[in-house]
Image 1: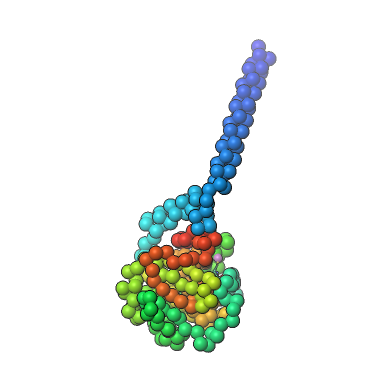
Image 2: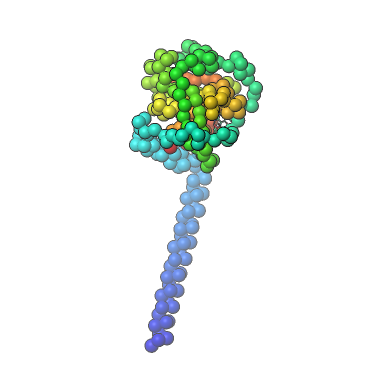
Length: 251
Ligand SMILES: Nc1nc2c(c(=O)[nH]1)N[C@H]1C(S)=C(S)[C@@H](COP(=O)(O)O)O[C@H]1N2
Ligand SMILES: [Mo]
């Protein structure tokens, strides 16, 4: 009697094991097949079609349900800001430009470009922010920045018509690094055209003379050394987007 019950249990376990194994193999085959299929897909702006669709769905949810211009990024006390700020990414910073003669090219419309000096930008109301800077590579650091709010800049330069467009595009003076950003994120009050870090002029490798600081976005969008700034209703070209990353890059 005792033996019999052990036998029954043994068989039961055996059947269960075989069943699990078959399910596992089936799962493996389906996964490999799906992966192969995915690899055969054409790429859309550097990302496989399905992945690009996933990123776009992500953007749709973030832009429409998560973003709210009243929702501010967390700020920190200034004394928590790192003294030694990490440097990451030097595309567009390698060529030595004549920084003394640098001017921001503000394209108000095609054929109407205003050249603005650093002194003129510094004359606008100044604001400061200490926040947690996040890079998609997985690091973050609390840092302190100073400059003019983009929304104040828009008001001072009479860009209300332009600010009704969908995107802002920015490029380095040599046009090798470039980003496109949705207008609600640009107009959010923590977004600044930045010329100071820890109360000092920006170091060259951190974007001297002027960079973007936009706490609602990941590091990739914080373009260092802005040469040209323009407005558009279609997505401006974007360096990391072209390499397969998400366009929106919000958090
Ligand atoms: N011109 C330019 N701006 C850039 C980059 C770059 O390569 N070139 N890299 C971006 C990335 S990926 C990050 S994380 C931040 C890093 O800014 P930091 O060097 O001040 O830390 O700059 C962004 N802005
Ligand atoms: Mo980054």
